[in-house]
Length: 161
Image 1 (tube, rainbow, N blue to C red):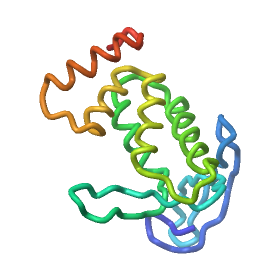
Image 2: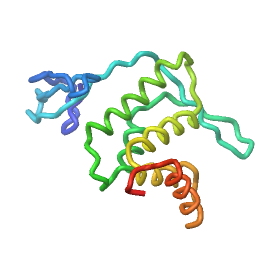
Image 3: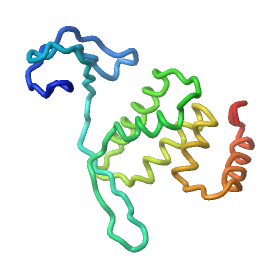
């Protein structure tokens, strides 16, 4: 494992333990070059999945490997300053990753992943759900927010809407 501080490729595992939801192994490592300590996470990858991204406007679609960290970043941004425990966010992301990897297809449209994230956030926190939707569905005016928020309230979202 490459050291994030000095890029040395030799590190020693000092401690290993499962994460709270048992979906990963947390490893505490020490660089043999500079002595710095850092943490890595090891997760099960069931299969290689390719995400198909529609380019729109008649352009050909792009394909790239599924990257869990992109979902983590998007969900973390939507949940920022919402007081949601990191464990619940990790469970949401792990659940989406499991759905993607067990779907049986080697390719999945990015829109399908976006819908999985939307559904997970809808159940987790209505404000995070609206934040994510505003980017994912490309809201351009305040009216877009109002219309979407009214549907969230009708569905029976939590009191934060």
